[in-house]
Length: 447
Image (tube, rainbow, N blue to C red; front, side, top):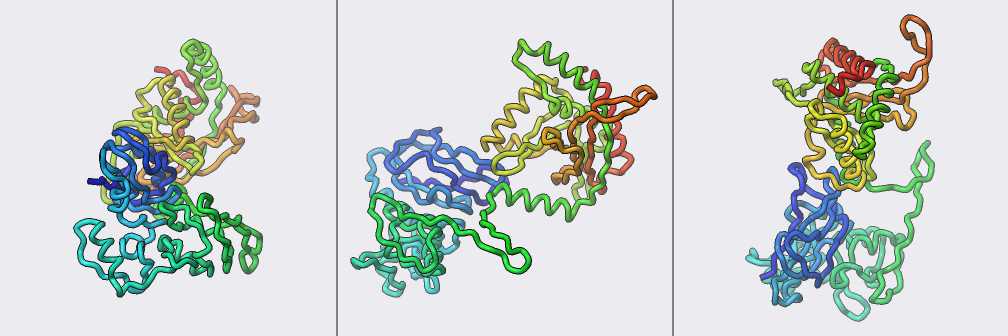
């Protein structure tokens, strides 16, 4: 009996995702543990492994489809010796694109019914339902092509075609069994009636045309859909600024001693293939500062204050899909070399969208460093439910008082953003002072 492959929940908070890429096709044999697809969650793109062995009978959700609900059937897996055509026919109609609610019903997907869905008896399996649907004379007939054959298209593709005034009879589908999907029609111009393409090649898509905004904002633009990561960033940071009373505290930190220590440590660690970055030392400095001022290693939780006994530092990394914060756990107890190795591995995974949920979920405080871009100073937005984030700028040569005399030193501005519900200004100031002392007297980072 064929096995439905369903959209997995790849993180505790995942309700829907984007099927970014299929790595298998109908007819391919898979074994347990084989990578079948890449799925974009609300934080990263993750690999989806097969849990059973068999042959891919059909693909129900095309790659690039957004908003696929967890539990949606995305493919069918045939057992050894099973007829692939029969296994494919047992699948529900091609799954909804972009979370289209209409396509969740098999009757709607096959007949294109919208206002009056076909009424079929409750189904024990998809096959009886399909038979009942196709024989129900009350269901509106699906559109047909010039030869009288039924046009197979997803509900979303039909709706887009109706809005654009596109005749689906002139569109060649690139979906399973020639089904017309969203990608086949969304690039067509309004009112276009494309010529029938060769069966072996998909219908050509016209490039999107720049549009203009009305009123004063009349500059040309091209609309881009938000990916899942950007949606989460927008939601969480809006929540942070609307619900968290931020307080900002800034200190200037002299870095010369820290830079000298880094040079000495890198010289001694060269044989081990380890090269410390300034950011590695700042991660350790923040963790040690939290150990010295535990009142800042907290989070506000309604009528409770959570006091953490471990310093898990979330480090902001710019990934292709958006900002993400992999975590150096228990950073206060880890050596600088270990922090450096872990940070390089996590940053590489973040940039390849390969982070696992346990590698970015959690954290008790955050560090954001824009110094490499020459930014002098900035205020970062707190990442809830954390209660603080440290923003560090570039180290630069500035006039500075050294031992009572004016001189030139390498100075960095660091700004702490604190949740004033959980952290008083005096406690935040103590943390910033502890961070400054650790950077200016960095031997405390290696003991």
